[in-house]
Image (cartoon, rainbow, N blue to C red):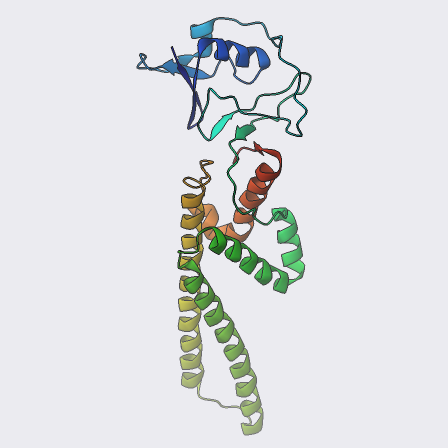
Length: 262
């Protein structure tokens, strides 16, 4: 009989009863985790299925001479499995072994460094926006997010520069005429640039959310790691939020260990 494990919103398995006992003994599966078999209608604690299992690890074969620290078991063909530790090594908390699929490695740079450097250097932040966008275009070349994203940023920059130039020109003309400019003209110019700025913001965010859709689609089909991206986090913090997941995926590519999404 095969059993499935439910943890948070994810399901793993199927596992045999012997595999469940081994994973519990190794500490990869808790007795409080929920499980069920194909013939069961409700999830029950693992302890009800296998009872209490000693925490001592069961005998394992010698470690093969490979650089990999963790390896997936053939009993689980799905994309994610509980991390299996070698003797004497504790598994990372909440980490999983994810089946590696050849594909591009995203930019690996800690999101906090992107935030700090971007705070002191605005140009770096703009450059990193395009680094992230270029990577997404690499894995999903058919997506048209880049058109919206670039168009929005260009409109924003043009409006910003044009507004700055207009303010300088208005100040100069006021100085020459001794003041008394037409408030209606000033209001019309401000409204015009405000509308242009709003259009730029909308286009840029359309591009950002298309990037989000491209990432979710790719990392749930081509490289299925069950990637979930919050719409709220994307709206307010997309640059650093995407980079957090890029770094997580890049580390998985290098080590085979996929850290939890958090």
